[in-house]
Image 1: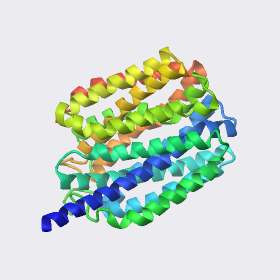
Image 2: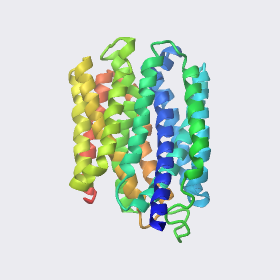
Image 3: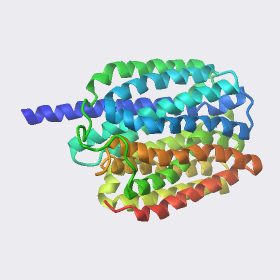
Image 4: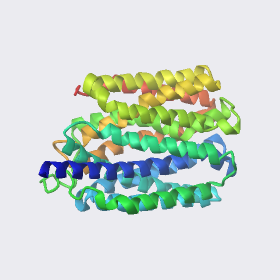
Length: 383
């Protein structure tokens, strides 16, 4: 009877944490799928958009030094609830921004809440995974991607219909706040390793640094796809307005599917092989879209990129959360700090290279990071 109650309790925690992953993905994809509309609305050039997009990862980086400490000191549950409320509210203010400086300011806060939610929800996921005794981290991230896919489909419908970003974002905000209200009581109260003697501030060891470098390369590719896939289909593939978000939707579809399959793949192939294959998929998919910038081959290319990007971050986060020298919150914050530097560099880099040459050359450069991911995977022990 006690065993049955324990299993039911673990399942309740898993569902609750999964819903918060869904909230995070839905809010972020709702922003990214409307970037082409906001770019047009504010009359931004490629370089100007690159500069504006720089604000979001700056906000992420500003929150990184404090997120891990807050989670370690106050627990991931409290931090997660706060971030999950403020994140969708900030999305609404993005829709209200009528000038560039306003958008830049709001995006910084959007990035701050995004990272705080990211660290706290992954800390929750590490605790739930410890109950099951097997890999389920990628499945949690699969829910994030599934939410991103849903957000992309919503954008695919509302953008051609002329629905303003503010109205779109207001509906998303209300939906997310309702989900927080219903599920927050079922979050994990006590994090894994709570009460240990691990310090609130600790220098990352070599293993954490290696994981961070792999995350860096993967997140350059991921950030590029989130922020520039729609623009690529708009300017290079030159699709009709109805199909501008197609690239983002197909990318998110295989990203979601790949994450649900990643735990199974790791069991059979190991972490090293899965990450190596991921890098190959990223590079080959981007080069296909660059070499054949037409709607079908570009869509297939973005499908491959989605497969490649899908498993890198969840697998790296899962390994980091099991660190023997740092608490889960601090280890995840350390890996995120290094990884999000890639997220910081990727989107603005695309804009600047596109301004000097073309978006096709920009995506070629990003393909090199996919190859780098494959090479760096040899530094990860096969597990």
